[in-house]
Amino acid sequence: SPSIHDWYETVKLNYGHDFTRGRDTAGLPGPDADPADVPKTWRTMDEILGYWQEMGVDGFRADMAHMVPMEFWRWAVKRARARREDVFFSAEAYDNDPAKLTEGHVLDGLLDAGFDAVYDDPSYDVLEAIYDAGQWANDLDRLTFTGRRFHQSLRYAENHDEVRIASPKVWGGLGMKTGKPVSAVLFSMGRGPVMLYSGQEVGEPAAGEEGFGGDDARTTIFDYWSMAEFTKWVNGGRYDGGRLSDEQKELREWYGKLIRATQGPAFTHGEFYGLNHANHETPTFGRVGDETFSGHWLYAFIRHDAGSGQSCLVVANFHGTETLKGVKVDIPQNAWEFIGREGK
Image (cartoon, rainbow, N blue to C red):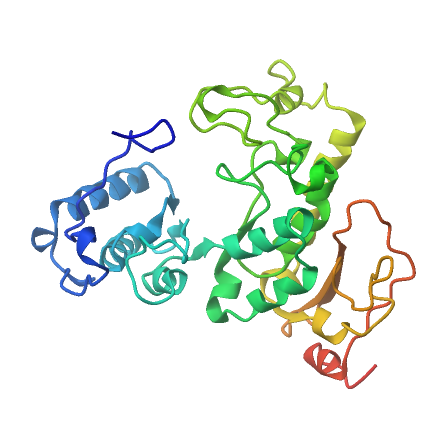
């Protein structure tokens, strides 16, 4: 029988594939199949999508999309786009889940199936691990060479599954301010969408035991609940932030500035050029204590849009207590050429 920790209230829908027999779904219908020739679940899901599209909904997030056959997504997304060409699909999916229904990289498979964006869980994991597991900012570099996926990733510093940045239990216990460098990097790396989770902008810490979810640094998804810090923004239905502290008001304003800043063409249309690899041996690139190699705490990159000519340098300090002074970033010749200049 299921334990208290099992998702026993869910069921596995029948998409026409016996998931106990491996990942080969090649026998399922193609994207142009007639509705009469597809599994009943496909038709039902298509009807649900169509209903909400008719109601005016123009975007959908698919939960655990990697556990559903890619053939279904190709068929369903194509039909949804026939009803409205610009309908947006994003996928929560994880390539390291053995339940994925493709032999290749499932995030690429979902993009090939028609999704506009896929979750960038790997970048989130690296950033959290800088604070909680000893990783370095340099470890982000390996995630910037993922082809088309890089600019079609949905990036976030919080979501309903992950811990709250402001929780004293995680992210080094440093509080809401940690969201600034983390979100600055995640929200400006690529051209994909970003997620600012409800309450993150006021430092909601998910403190205390929240019903079935327990005291796990997350805002519960199992119970009706109230977010104590967010209700200070609601302020008795006035929605004016009247009960927020000065620090919370400043944080909320800062997130607004970040979102507005990333609407420039360098971020919405531009390319990415990482600078950490060129600064490993640069002593002024944020070293702390007796470090002899750079890139532990600082992450730097350029975003450049050739069409508008706009270039932006992004430098973030992930050290929770050290203000890094005298920082100098070496910009190599290739980077100058990247932004259309001949040299330093």
